Image 1 (cartoon, rainbow, N blue to C red):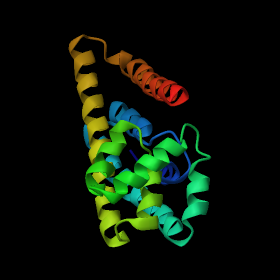
Image 2: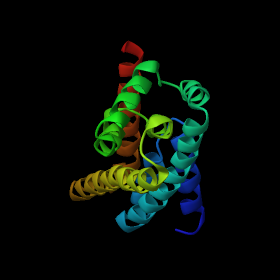
Image 3: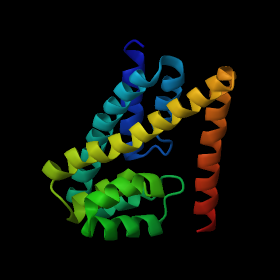
Image 4: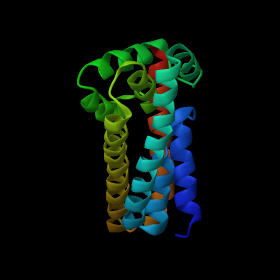
Length: 183
């Protein structure tokens, strides 16, 4: 796999934890097809730690200057005040559960990080919780990609893997952007 994949995944995870809007799961799932599930798991760990580092930066910004941080995250495509309000509310109640669930319900992690800095848990709690929450989602992506690959292999169509993965990510983002546009 070399060093380029972990570095690329780490950079992507930090970018997505701050201002980028395409999740690092995309690159991790490609790596699963290219190198196998073990490589995907390793990259998921790298991504979780890197995302938590980016999240710490957002936590610090949210703590030091919450209004500026909030205004900045609202410039990210498909992030609106409704999601920021939801993250604000969810950080105040059962924040860890919402940090995990937000990863699959469409609330970007960066919003939780800013709101946690503004009025939530300390970084000593938020960073390890972030690693656990992000790792959970990244491992789900690895598992689903591995399952899809095995199904395609059983159907004697393993070469379809990248096409199915591309279609899946287009559907995920198409659905997300459609929902956000109609919200």
